[in-house]
Length: 308
Image (cartoon, rainbow, N blue to C red; front, side, top):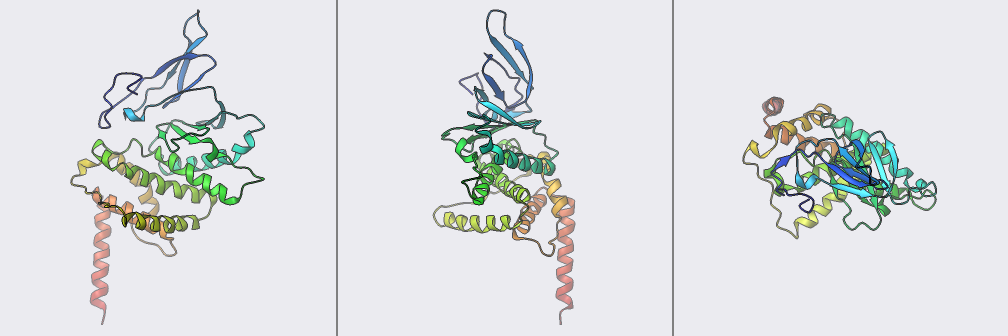
């Protein structure tokens, strides 16, 4: 961004951004927010000026501008896929990814309806070397990772595409969440995005066993990493380290859905997810967390005393 305008490129500094772009008429422009209006730049040139809605407060590294001649596929009112060749001949290759993007996004919106993401543009770039980049309202993909051929590809290819896309979409709800002092623990964003992305994939395929497979697969990979690197846990010394208000909003829906107590016939993913969410709820000093802990302690003491 420093190549576009003067700025303090520090994650702890947040501001609103009122962006407008002058561009040739044949070029489409995108930014973090939806387009507000377009006007002719002047009567002497074939240029337009596109105005975008003002962003919410965000760090400068979240800001992005895209100028492209790509064609677009409207997935729904707020989601658009941009690709180099979206002709009628090529569009069947993107039919599955359109469905999975729509399903995952709708599920995450229902889970975190307190946090509004006004629009999402998915940009598929051939041979894109930095696959995984996600900004507020903009998600970049390697084009080959989105293509599914009904005739040639297997069912596992669908799973592969969904696993690649889901964390990027989930990241939209976490990218502007944590306060600046947590920037050194940026991996926490990836953990939350991956965790909720996997849950969205399981909901999209209506198969809870996907979550069990996810745990097994990542557990062994984590143990492998632990044996090679000196990994230290995050230490929270103050509640000021967390943007408490936003984090509370984020936890409300999962806590309401999962509750504080384990249920019969739950899969391992749900148990692990509850443990992690309850831990954060206790860190943020939820009253119900304290009451739940007291109930468990009383139950434990009662059972211990009643034993012969």
